[in-house]
Length: 581
Image 1 (cartoon, one colour):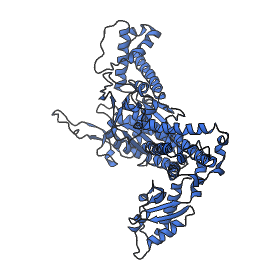
Image 2 (cartoon, rainbow, N blue to C red):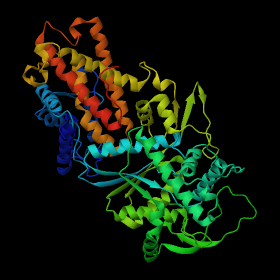
Image 3 (cartoon, helix red, strand yellow):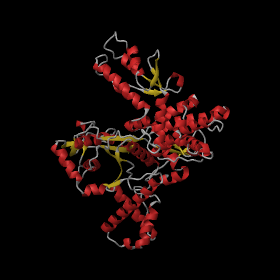
Image 4 (tube, rainbow, N blue to C red):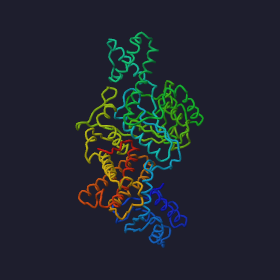
C-alpha cells in the first residue's frame, strides 16, 4: 500500500526481523503488538510507535544499546527527518515534508479509488445477511444487519476481495404454512367470509393488499379449489410478493443482493443427503439421547433417541440433533445443507450476519463448516444486538406476530436513508443500540452524520467558489505550486489524517469493523470544522486569500484531498456526499 503508516510499519517489522535473526530479541516476539499512532500535536512528531517498549522487554542481550541502535535504524529510513524517544519509551517520528507531499499528490491523482488495495488477493467471499423470514415486511430488527452486511461487503471489495451479497430465503417449514393460511383468510374476508385470524397466525394488515391482488386476478376462484392446490398457491404467492416487497425496501437504503437462495431449492436438490454422507463417513453422526435442556424443570420431560451430530468434537459444548424424533431433518440439518451448497460454489470464506437470537447457534454451525471445509476459520459469524427505537423520548414496543411494528419503509420516510445507514454501523454490532428517530435528523454538531456531511459541503463550497476566479480554475493541475511552508500546523495535521485513510480502510477490512470508518469521519470532520472556525478569527487561516495566489492554491489542493477522502468513505458506507446543505 502507498500510505505512510503501512510503509513505516513494514520497515519497523524489518527492524524486528533483523533483531530476531541476530538473536538480540526473542524468537517468540509478538509483532501484532506493534502500534503506530497519529500524534495530534505536530511539534511532538507526526506519529508515535511503541516499538522501543516492546523490544526492551524482549532483549536477550543485556549489554545491547537498544536506544542507540533503534535510533540509528529508524533515522536511516529515507522518509524520516527526526526521531525522539521519550522517557517512557515511545518513539516519536517526524517525516520529511517531501515524502508527505508526494503521498498527497498520489491521493489527488487517484480520486476514485484512493485507499483501495489488493490485499484480499481476489479471495472469493460470500456474505449472507438479512435473510429475514418472508413472512412480513422488514423492520428495525433487520436493518442493523442489513447495513452492516452491505458496508462490510463494500469494504472487502475495496480491499481486493470478490464478494457475493446473498440473501437466504427460508421458504420451507411451518411458518410458511401459517403464512399461506393467514393470506387465505384475508382473501376470504374480501368475499364476505366471516373468519378470524388466530394469535398464532400473521394478523398484520400487510397481507390485505396481497390478498386483493389475488382477488382482482382470480375473483373468488380459490374459495372453490381443493385444499392441497389452494394451500400450495397461497404459500407460493405470499412468498413471491413478500420477497418482492423486501427487495424494494432494501433498495430504499441502497442495498441490493447478488443472489437469493431459497431453502426449498436446497431441499429439492437433496443437498442434505450429501451432507449426511459426509458426516456419516467421518463417524460424526450417531443415535443418542439429548441432555435435558437447561432451565427446563418440567416433570414430564423424557429423553428420546434421535440422530445427533458430534458437534462437541469441535467448538460446541454439546452434540446437536440432526434429525427429529419422528425422522424429519432438523432446521440445523437444512441449514447445514445450505452452507455446504455455498462451499460447493467455491467460496474461500463465508461470513454470516446474524441477530442476537442466533448466538446459541454459532458454535454448531462453525463445527459443521469446519467438517465440510477442513478449515476451522471457514465461517465467521457477526452478531447484531437489538436496536430499540425511540420516538418523542419514548421507546416503541413492537411485535411482528401481533402485527405491531414499524417497517423499514416507514423509518426511511421519517429519517432518511443516510442517518439510518450511518447510525447502524456507528458502533460495534455486538453492542445494543438505541436509535432516536428525532435526534438523527437534527441539523447540529451533535448529530454526527449531519456534522460529517456538512464538512464535505463546506469544503465543496470553497472549491466551487474558487472556480469563479480564473487563477484557480485549474488548480488540480498545479501540483508544482504547492508550498508546504505556507501551511499552518493545523492544516498539516489534517493532511496527515487524510493520508492515513488507506491504512484505516485496510485495518477496517482486516477486523471487519465498519464503525472505524464513522469514527474516522467524525475525527476528520471535527478537524476541518475547527480550522474553518479559526479562519473566522484569523485572516491568515482563511481558505481563500485572493491576495496570495500560491497560498490559496496550496490550500485548495489539500481541501480537494479532503473532499476525495470523505467522499470515498461516504461511498463505502453508502451515504451521500452533498455539495450544498
